[in-house]
Amino acid sequence: GENVEQHPSTLSVQEGDSAVIKCTYSDSASNYFPWYKQELGKGPQLIIDIRSNVGEKKDQRIAVTLNKTAKHFSLHITETQPEDSAVYFCPPSHEDTGFQKLVFGTGTRLLVSP
Amino acid sequence: SAVISQKPSRDICQRGTSLTIQCQVDSQVTMMFWYRQQPGQSLTLIATANQGSEATYESGFVIDKFPISRPNLTFSTLTVSNMSPEDSSIYLCSVEVGDYEQYFGPGTRLTVT
Image 1 (cartoon, helix red, strand yellow):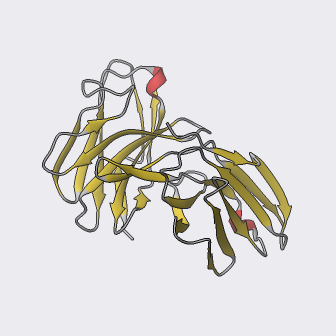
Image 2: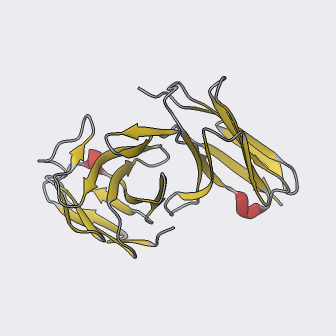
């Protein structure tokens, strides 16, 4: 089965700094790579995603890059703000009997200090 | 995207009892999913609920413990049966919209005493 690892497990930055979280996976069949942000007491929120035929995608302050050969993808957040503080998950997915099955890793806790 | 609501948002239950969690989505969707997230941990898929068919359970989860209903394209329920303290978790439903995107509800925080 899929094995997902995130690094680092905890990341502390100052407001305005950049933050990078890396996700490695094992299943070469994975073809969809989303990032979720989960704030305390809330459900995960889809913030950006990338398909296997694209190497990079950007949406304002956040971007995702994908290296399928090396089986890793990364979340880049620029000009971090305290509101970016949350746990971030990167569940790569592959088709499993008609739906995309997300496989969650342990998450990365991002803390942005003012 | 999709707007998903869950009821109840939280509950405290006694061991041996059952709790039914409701999930409502604001648009018709084919695939709905139920996850469990223990405090400070990752999400684990319990089952997939496709309207008009029996739910499909992941390894380690059984229908007798987590019966699921999916009566229409906007609603599903998950029952946690014969609860024990080990069932204390956050239970989340999600839906698949468009190509691959999954959107999550706010979760139901369950404490079993």
